[in-house]
Image (tube, rainbow, N blue to C red):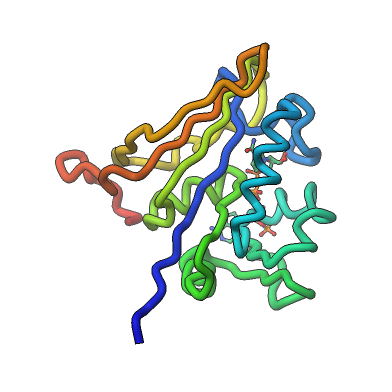
Length: 182
Ligand SMILES: NC(=O)c1ccc[n+]([C@@H]2O[C@H](COP(=O)([O-])OP(=O)(O)OC[C@H]3O[C@@H](n4cnc5c(N)ncnc54)[C@H](OP(=O)(O)O)[C@@H]3O)[C@@H](O)[C@H]2O)c1
């Protein structure tokens, strides 16, 4: 029997200063309604989602309705359609029974997903705002280069929220591959 190849799609909304959030306990209130609409449409083609425990807690009502995997050291097991696990490698294995899986952050999930090559496509919406303080997309956790190639881009609204769609070009640059955690 042919094995199904799961497509992992990373989806991120970024401020101009590279932040994903200015308050870890709340859903972002600085992103555009056009991005939200695009995001909801995108989720209709995803069979499952992966999030960190903090993101799960701020978006619990929406995530509980989906097949979801939550990265957490504190929580274990399964509640309804939500499965908790303490490593992203375990989650990757479990998620491989689905065709299309959305990787939705936050920072730890994004960086770990890149480290274990769990991203085939990357959608980034850049919102025209500087947040100042807050949580950055990847922190300083990625130690090697990962190359992407731009497939599409779209201006979503008049203020200039921009949606960028990348595909992975090369998993990591062998000349600079000094990441011991890979
Ligand atoms: N702009 C965007 O696109 C976007 C996307 C997603 C989220 N957000 C925002 O980002 C914020 C939350 O992100 P965040 O980065 O603070 O948190 P997060 O990544 O959602 O969750 C962090 C939690 O994940 C678990 N975790 C992390 N690394 C782990 C590991 N190696 N092994 C096991 N468990 C691990 C821990 O849970 P335990 O404490 O339970 O062990 C940790 O507290 C929210 O404000 C959310 O709205 C924005």
